[in-house]
Amino acid sequence: MSFAAPGEPLRILCLGAHADDIEIGCGATVLGLIAKGVRLEVDWCVLSGSGARRDEAERSAAAFLQGAADVRIEVAGFRDGHFPYDGAAIKAWFERFKDRPTPDVIFTHTRDDRHQDHREVCQLTWNTFRDHQVLEYEIPKYDGDLITPNLYVPAPAELVERKCDLLREHFVSQSDKRWFEAETFMGLARLRGVECQTPARYAEAFHARKLLVA
Image (cartoon, rainbow, N blue to C red; front, top):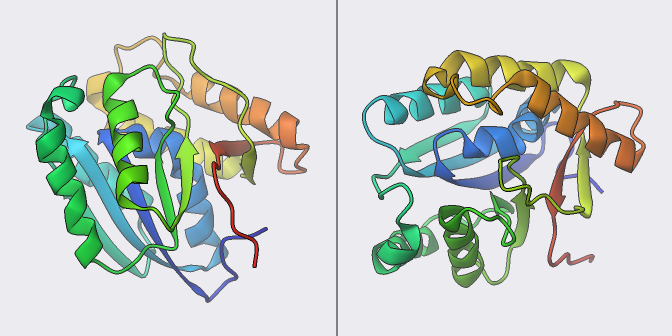
């Protein structure tokens, strides 16, 4: 399977509860599509971010999407840690996507994520997009909630290293978190590369709940 061939258009919607979620979950995949020459059209949407975190999110998204054919970056101001309690407002925010061009692929959080904000975003993704290809990405964290994925996107070492470099460069506010380091992201990508036996050695992995083969 492949997303698109070089020169072909591909519209993706990337959803993240917090600044840095999208980059951690599918950053190498996005970088790989651009490097491959896919004509990438992107809606990159972060649901919570204010002050320095908003600035980090916007700068990071612009860096990851450099070379994409069309880019729309949006950072909303929902309260970090309160998404289940602000569900009505977030639901209304999601409904706006029905008036936008239909994405070919949607990247979002996994439903088994232990962070309440992440789970809320996943639930509303599926509630809003019922006839789309949705891929749920994984975020390593203290909770130890990673489970075996079922879809893998190989990524050569240079792309994963580039992802790590951009994360370190743009999310200075997270540098004091012990898990927020290149070793964590490279290690997970290496493990996923082993699982899918890719010659690239590294991969990002996703949970694909539904796939339509035509």
